Structures are given as C-alpha cells and as structure tokens.
Length: 119
Image 1: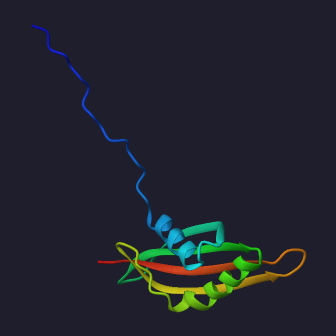
Image 2: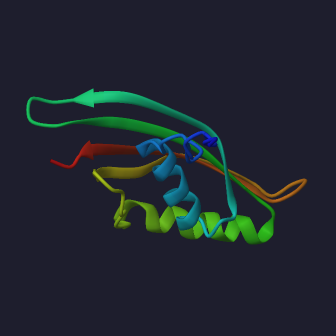
Image 3: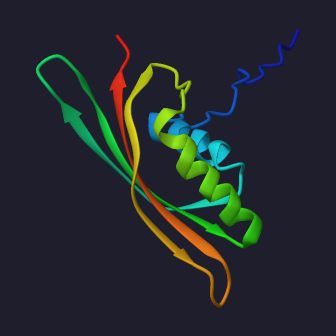
C-alpha cells in the first residue's frame, strides 16, 4: 500500500501593514483619493508618559478637481478623527502649502502628525 505525501498547505505571507501605511491610506481617503504621497518620513518620539512616532508627509494634488479636494483636506485635517488600530493621532496639522495655478493647477501640502501608541 502506498501513501501519497502532500506538502502542507500554507497561506501566502503578506507583509504586515505598519502604522505609517495605515496613516497614508487614511490621509489619501481624507483627500478624497485625489492626492499622491510624494514623501513620508517617520521618526520615533517619546515623552516621560507616551511613546509614538512623528510623521511628516508631502502630498500632491494635481489638476483642478484635485486642488479643490486638497483645499478641503487642508481645512479638515486638524480636526479629523482618525481611526487607526492601536494608535491615537495626538496632533495633526499643515505646516506648508505650495499652491500654483500655472501652467497646471497643483497644490502640494506638507503635513505633520504625531501618533501615540494606544495603551
């Protein structure tokens, strides 16, 4: 009697999404999916009572409709309630805006966010 051996089934391993990945997705959604992240830096941050990360992002809104979405993004960001698993957004703000009309409308928004680990 022969027994057929089959290798164990394994699920493909997906890379784990970081808090930075989830933050980028949330910001793109807040920008009505009209923005493109140009740069994103993340730096560890800690105080005596809290630990987290400080994020700096540059987001491009290109085209008339995208620029309008970017303007709404600027207005909404400071008060937006983010839902990020395991993280609290302690501070979110726009630090710089580059708005150009010619030759094509474009808006580049530099934003800074502080994420704290949710205990």
